[in-house]
Length: 158
Image (cartoon, rainbow, N blue to C red; front, side, top):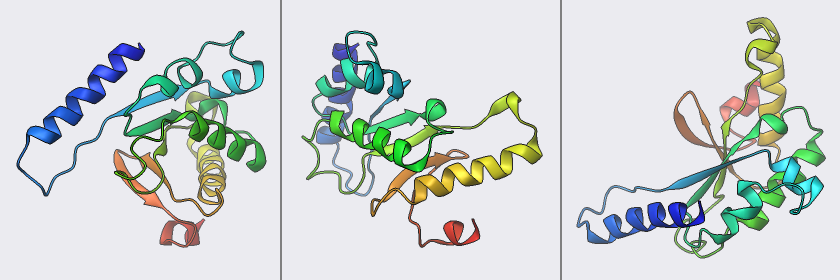
């Protein structure tokens, strides 16, 4: 999987280098899930993408988090999880890609909650994400990639 991820990232990087267009950006990302398993139980017990693949994808642009294992966490545990993910992300592209390179790709309670229950729990989760220190945390919501800050309109409505 490491080689597969590195080859995919290299293909994106090569295509960008070979393209003369300058007003378009294309990026690659990998997605990690079950991060808490790797973080809490050590690498010998849980071989996960976050600890066995991501550190070795040498030029990775972005990292997406399928965050179902973090949605019910207290803010301090959620932020520790995001910090753990950030510690595994190679730093090769820090100067090329400004800002946070981790986003929340998946979250939600699915069939375990009805619509009326999901709205407040989603709102509370998003609020915890928005308060992730002074960092801007990009995340995907309804197919749109947006950088959310605690001072933006969405945060003011929460």
